[in-house]
Length: 81
Image 1 (spheres, rainbow, N blue to C red):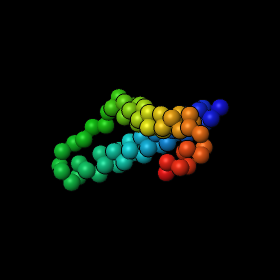
Image 2 (image 1 turned 30 degrees about the vertical axis):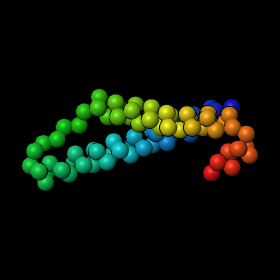
Image 3 (image 1 turned 135 degrees about the vertical axis):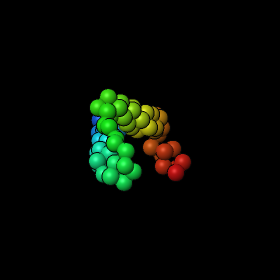
Image 4 (image 1 turned 90 degrees about the horizontal axis):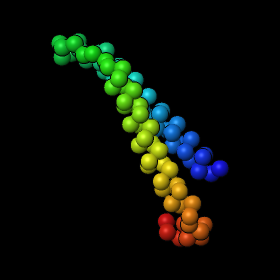
């Protein structure tokens, strides 16, 4: 149950970060051509790939430390801070 909660939290945080990054990229691709003078195309495949990478990174860096900490006794986890 706890692992599922960490998995959901890490997934949501990864997807939110990836979505914000994609949104920032779209905003940049909208305004940047006027500055540099070259057209910029937005690839849906690259955006989906970026979201998947953000999800995987969120899961890897969120769930792995949580599962390691779950195996510690509470007093040991507090003592190691």
